Structure formats: C-alpha cells, structure tokens
Amino acid sequence: MNKFIFVSGGVCSSLGKGVAASSIGALLESRGLNVRMVKCDPYINVDAGTMSPYQHGEVYVTDDGAETDLDLGNYARFTKGRLSQANSITTGQVYEAVIRKEREGKYLGKCVQVIPHITDEIKSRILAVSNEESDTDVVIIEIGGTVGDIESIPFLEVARQMIHEQGKKNAVSVHLTLVPEVAGGELKTKPTQHSVKTMQETGIQPDIVICRSPVMLDEATCRKIALFTNVDPDAVFTSPNIDTTIYQIPIVFFEQKLDEVLMRKMDIETRYADMCTWNSVMEKYSARQEKVRIGIVGKYMDIHDTYTSLNEALFHASLENGVDAELVKIDSSLLEETENIDSILGGMDGILVPGGFGQRGINGMIKAAAWARTNKKPYLGICLGMHVMIIDWARNVLNWNDADSTEFSPDSKHPVISLFEEQVNVKIHRIGASETVNEDGTHIIAAYGEKRITERHRCRYGFSNQYRSEMTASGLKLAAFNSDGALVECVEWPDHPWGVAVQFHPEYKSKPMAASPLFREFLARCQDKK
Image (cartoon, rainbow, N blue to C red; front, side):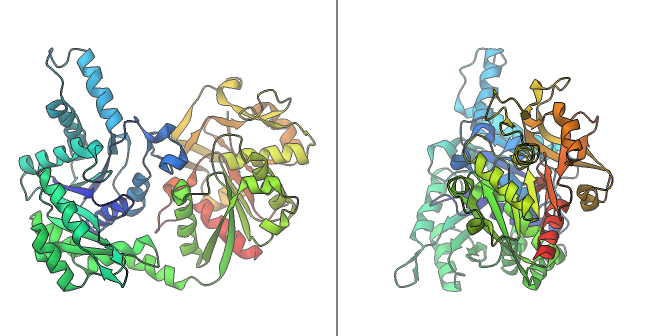
C-alpha cells in the first residue's frame, strides 16, 4: 500500500511549505523510495495561467503543458518524480469537474454537496497520482494556504478522511508553523500551539511539527511544543533561517533525523540514506570563487517569486562554473527613462532578458539588448528576450525604425514578431515540451552538445517567417528551428562573444545537480568576458 504525507501550514503564509515538502521528498528519495508530489491550491482559478505575476509569482510549466503553481518548480528541482497536470489540484478544477458531472446527470439527481462530492473529487485526484505508476512508494500532498482559512477546509477534510481510511501508518500529517522571535531574542511558541489546536479542530492531529524559526530550537523549547500539541518529543523539528541556499534544507532536516521519524511512523523498513547529491551541492556552493554580475532586465522586479525558476537556474549554473553569480534586478522601465544606459548596465558582466507579456518596459529591454550587442557583452534572451533581440536588430541594423511585435503595435509595417496564427501555415499554441533542432556551428548546439533537444514553451508570439531571408542576409543567425522547420527557436548575433536568445524556457528543466546547458554556457562566457 502506498504511503501519504499531508503537509499543511499555520500561523501565516510564505513559511516555505513548498521547500519543506520538497525537502522531505528529497530525503525519502535518498533512502531509495519513489516519491510523487501533489500541490492542492485553494484558489478558485482553474490554474495559474491567467494570474498576474504580482498576485501569484511565477507560472511553472510542465511537459504536458500544465500552467501550475511555482511550488511544482521546487518539486522538480528537489525530487525525481514525474510532474504533470495531475500533480496540480485547484479548487477551480475540482468545482468545475463536479459541476460538469452534475450537469451530465452523473450524480443521479442527488443534492451535490462539499461532502462527499467535492472531497471525493479531490481524493480521487490524489489517488490517481498514487496509482499512476506502479512503483510509487510515497505521495506527498502539500495543502496550500494557512490552516483556519475557509478556502482550505475541503482539502484538510480530505486529509482527515484519508488519514482515517488509510490508517495512521499509511497516512501522516506534517504541520509547518511559525515560532517568531520577539524583542530581546525570545522565541514564542504560542502561535504554534494555536496553529496545531486549529488543526485538531479540523479532526487532524499532526504527527510531526516543523517550526519555522530564526534559529534552531533548543531541546527545552521542542519539549514544550510537544507537550502542548500532543506530538511526540522527537517529532518536533526546526526549519531555521539559513544564509546559504535552500538546497541545504534537506541536509538540515537529515541532521535532525526527520526522515528516520517519518519512516518509523509510516512503518517503512530502515534504509541507508545516500546524501551524496546534497552534500555535493553544498561543496560546490562553498567552492565558488570569482564573482560575476548578471543584469536581469525584466518587467516584474518587485517580488522575487516572479522569476523563481530563472534565478534558480542561474544559481545552478554558478555551482557548475564555480562562480558567485550576483543577480542585479533592473526594471526595464528605468532604462526607458535614461539617456546614460552605461550608468546602469556598465558594471554588468552579462545581460539576461526573461519572458513576460505586455508593452510596459519593452523599449527598455530593447535598449538593453542593443547595449549588450554593441558592447560585446554576453546576452541571454528567453521568450520575450528573444523578441526584443530581434526587434533591436530590425530597428538598429536593418534600420526599420517602425519594426515591432504585433503584441505591442498591431499596425506596424515591419511586424518581425507576430502571433503564430497570424503566420502562414502555422497553427499552434505553444505550451509544454516540444522538440528543437539545432543548427551546426552555433552557440546553442555547442551548449547542448546535441542536434535535437526537448524544452518547454509558454508563448503565443514568435519570429515572423516572412522576414527570414532579410534577417539572415543582414547577418543574424537563425540557430535552431522546431522539428518541422516551420518556427524559429533560436537566434544568435554574428561576430559576438555570446549573444543567444531562445523561444523556449530552459529554466524550467534546470536542477541543482544538472544545470541548464544554456545557463551554464551563458555564465561561462560572462566569466570569460570579465
């Protein structure tokens, strides 16, 4: 029988449930178990695809084209289990499915209610992930939101039911709470006590409590929390603030024997823990030496979560290259307002323009691409970053002053970027994994070392095929295409140390132990240029 771990959070949001759940998955995998991850999001949106980056942060895309919560990106970076649409469950999806079944008469005229119909739908989706692959040992289900929120109640009720139905040795509850530090450095356990009490009111007694705290909790504080929450004394753990990287958290939990306690509670035989992967990551982290400054010229710079996968991919590349990558956030709108762009970009060793939508700040990105091209600075453009690289070339090399994307200027006389459906013989909405064929003698094939690669897309606009001949005649390299050659996947600058832009999102597949080839080569060229 498969085992289930329900990870919930209390006191407040943004405590790091996703990283904690991912770290638990990493620990269990280190003991030879096959783990699958599930995220339950309480919002009524069907998925994250239409949500603002300011509201939600990054949208993570899976191979099958699901637009999901950014926590699935953490799952992908920490664990090996396959991720798809099935691993992301939202209230919107659940209610949509239940209402559709009701309209189709599937409930035989019964009164449709939250219990059992909504909870049964959630439960069936969790069990579907559990049964999808025969070798799955443990399913970790992260329940979004904070205990006490009205939106989370159906998911917590599912956890209660499954713990009862599966039995305590097959389904356990892990609760992450906050232990704040007040004036004078005193740690307060009362918020944790109240959070666990709220969990108990839902019918769930947490088996393990993880305390998010500025420092490691001492034994006396752990005993106090155990006493007031009905948790075993050895089942109270600390997730402390760390000044290194989130990839140290599996090691921190391992040193506290979190995996041993979990396996004992789930009645799983003891297995040797192989932590070589995570120890190697931390060794590489400590071995980094030379610093390179990367200017990230984007539209959504106010919150870190907007470019989570991108930031992590640069970090992974820094580990492989042995460099300390300092990421400098540059709001592209600021570049539109300045005449002295050198004052902002002059100290950068490389420029990266990430994906995005909408017109705000676009001209600032185009100026950044032009600056990197003329100053021979390494440049990596991703999706929108490829579009602005092409627009810069059209405007400043081909002298098409009105060149633009139809996203920003529908009436442009030189729409070098356009919707795929606007192009002749192209009928495709690009989201999820697809094949790219790299041209010989290009930077992209040198980075990957392969002719054919598979990466994930999330785009509606792309290179306008009507301008292929004029672009190539002027020197711009069309370095990669999709499998049938209909779409341009990569462009590169001629006579430049490393100017590469791609239509896909290589950051989605990067891992701490296997950096994305493009990010790795980009940082290597930044290092060379420095």
